[in-house]
Length: 200
Image 1 (cartoon, rainbow, N blue to C red):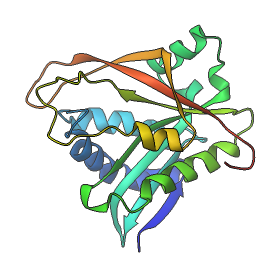
Image 2 (cartoon, one colour; image 1 turned 90 degrees about the vertical axis):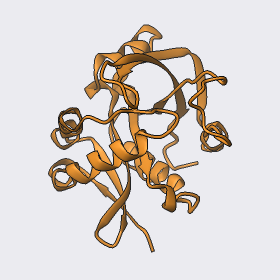
Image 3 (cartoon, rainbow, N blue to C red; image 1 turned 180 degrees about the horizontal axis):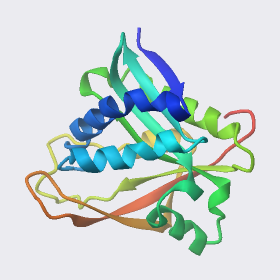
């Protein structure tokens, strides 16, 4: 039985190192191909412990973290995430932003992804003024030579959750790909969903 637990504030701190390890391991694979950086991970993840309205949702197999998903109010996020919303006239204070979901391969296809979304959406409903949940996903060329055989997108899963891809809501983030030292730009599209008060 996999336990899914939502943490906030200082509860997050003891789990920052396992979360960093999960991010580095999972994002090394397609489609992100992220060459992990432990120092960057420490700085990036510490924000969740500092934000009183942030949440980290853990998937635990016993005492071992095998997956995690994160979220925080968009107004507490970096400018790269906030500015596309502001430019479209969407107040960042009205959006709860989902940072990532990472899950070790052997634990996939057990419904944990749905539980991650449920937990973060439930957390967002408890925050005053939040009317939308959002995340972004990297865009890859269909002919990218690094694409593994049989790779599939998560578009159908996200659509089943009520999220819609926003063609005009885009950000660019830089990270080094596997085997590289210099960061390169990556284009990501946002997906949005209105947050109903009492669930779907």
